[in-house]
Amino acid sequence: MARTAYVNGEYLPIEDAKISILDRAFLFGDGVYEVTAVLDRRLLDISGHLARLRRSLREMNINFPMSDEALVDIHLELGRRNGLEEGLIYLQITRGSADRDFPFPENIEPTMVLFTQDKKFGDSPVSRTGAKVVSTPDIRWQRRDIKSTALLAQVFAKQVASEAGCYEAWMTEDGFVTEGSSSSAFIITPERAIVARPINNQILAGITRQSVLKLAAEQELKVEDRRFTLEEAYQASEAFLTSASSLVMPIVQIDDQTIGDGKPGPLSLRLRELYLELAQTEEPRI
Ligand code: PDD
Image 1 (tube, rainbow, N blue to C red):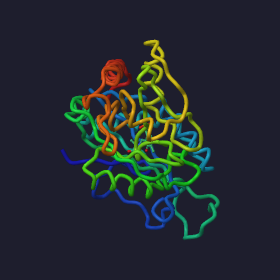
Image 2 (spheres, rainbow, N blue to C red):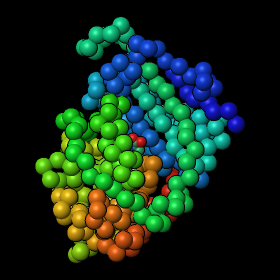
Image 3 (tube, rainbow, N blue to C red):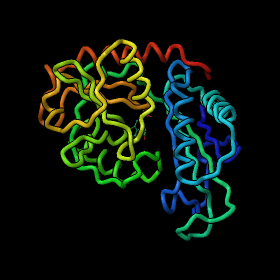
Image 4 (cartoon, helix red, strand yellow):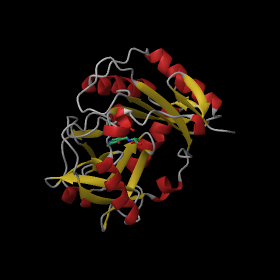
C-alpha cells in the first residue's frame, strides 16, 4: 500500500507531501510534535497526547484553533488510508513559514503534518530479553517540558546509544538521571518502590508514564516522586522506561552494570502487561 501523509488539510502520497523551505520548524526547530501509538487499530492515550500538544502550543504562543475532535478524526482517517494496525502516528505543528527572521512573525498560519509508521511493538523481542541503556550528559535547554521539534541533543544522545549497542540513552545532570533521549526513566528500589522524577521544566511529562503510574497506584504499588542518581540506578532491583514508541520496556543493563539478575524484572513486566491490557480497552479505533 502506498504511504499517505497529511499536510495542511490534504492527504497526499508521502513523496508529494512537502512544506516550504521557509518553514520555521525547518529553519529554527520552531514547532511541536506528538507521537501516538496504535495497537490493534486503537489510538493509545490520545486524549493525553492532545492535552500535552495543547500545552506545548500554548507555551510556544502558537495559535491553533482546530478542535480535538477534528485532530482525532485526522488520526483515524490517516490510519485508515495507511491500513495501520500497529505502529505510530506522528503529528507536527509548526509556527508556519515566513521569511527568515528570529522573532515570531505576525499573522502566519501554522503548518500541520502527520504521517504513520508501521511498528510491531505489542510483541517486541527486546521487551522479553530487556533493554540496555547507556548514560550520557543531558545537554538540553531549560524548557524540556515543551515537546518541541528542536531535538538535536536527543539525536546526539541516541547516537551515543546506537554506537554503544544500546536501546536507549539515559541523560544525566548533576549526577541525577533526567530521562531517556525519547522516553521516561524509572527505577524500582530493593524496597519495591517505583521511583520517577517529578514533573517540571527539566523533563517532558510522558503520557505513557502518566498512564503507567496510574496503573501502579491502582495496584497499590509504592511510587516515589523524586529524582534518582545514576549510582542509585546501578543498585536498583529493576529499571524500565516508557514511551509511545516502546510502551513499557524493562531495562537489564545500565552502562556496564547489570540490573537485578539481568532479566526483565517482575514488576516491570507486570506494568507492561497491565498497560497492554489497558490498551485493549482504548477507543476509538481506526
Ligand atoms: N518521545 N521524554 C522524552 C524526551 C521524549 O521524547 C518522550 C517521547 C518521552 C515519553 O513520552 P510519551 O510517553 O508521551 O511518548 C519522554 C517520542 C516517542 C519520540 O520523540 O519519538
